[in-house]
Image (cartoon, rainbow, N blue to C red; front, side):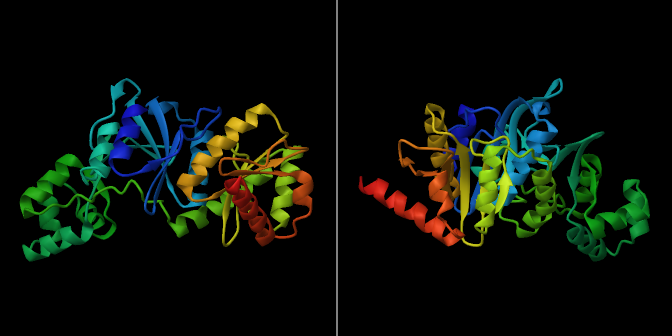
Length: 321
């Protein structure tokens, strides 16, 4: 974990406090400009289960970030440098690859998949090089030992190929053909977030309603789209057109002080608001940048803008104090 924090800090990221509350879908949030990362750290990346990956992916896309896993090994072998691995649609890599990407500006080119290591081909570059050499699809296919249809797929679809085939093609045309892998492909991607909405609805419907869920329903009636987060320091993320709120729900106790402090740290990195709805009475009004709101106070709020005004006013009063 310390190595990962060192790499991201050196690369100019601001980082949240480490999430040390279980269960957790991510260990640290990190931001640099418009880049927002939710990082999960695992010694063996096979320890990532499907539910945690789903929670991590939904949360990242909902807020406009990217989810990654940083690990050391898979099964009985070490993760290779400059190679990315996929686990339940979450990209995984080792610390060295992370360092090369963010500090050396060297993106990985190789992805691991069942059967070996593969690279994606820049199809337009390959097609241009082949035509410049006046070589037909059939002639090129015969030279590298693949079918004509395979060459066509390389050119038109950027289909993955083995490292051996790539090196043959690059040697023939003396051009670089490997397509760099963007480990931030989902970061800030609106289309990607829209694709997540159907999954969010399924997740919401599958949740068992508890007293705190009724409070989340109240927030929904104010005009927020509420995403439950079963594996995060907060109960949900609430979002409307103008604001995103990390939302905790609990009765007041000593445990929520630690949780609210962690939420404050994460909200500073993610550029969101942080609110804890207290089901009952609260002895304090704020913990750092996390505002505590009693349920009876929430009852008096009629829409999302009024809630946002309430949060800002309470934060301002806390800062003056």
